[in-house]
Image (cartoon, rainbow, N blue to C red):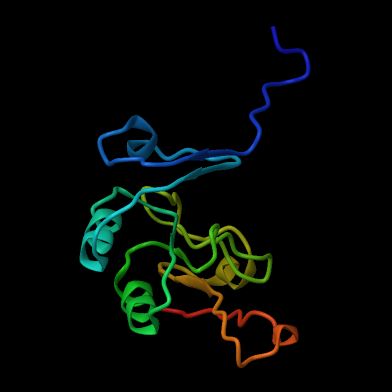
Length: 143
């Protein structure tokens, strides 16, 4: 009944909780699920207890909180002050846990690496002392 396919536009789900089906199932598409917690420890526990490990983001003005999160969170793609931590083609797909099948990641350097877990961290910081022309600092951390 859908001769031109089935299209869902960009969708944002707010106030998502861990007992909702949209949180419990890994979905793909132009969908963003927002889960709010009261502490950094609660955020780490929530993400690390998930059976999936594709991507997560944290929004903070604290460099200490961002560093703790990026090092302790158990997912392959981390966004710091970036809403969707999808890597660019020069990064490999870095999903973990139930978000990854096989023994090689999809593209990039991971095409020749076996049995490794990498973590891509994309962060963006705003500082009034730094000119906007300086742009975001994009980097990759290998674990």
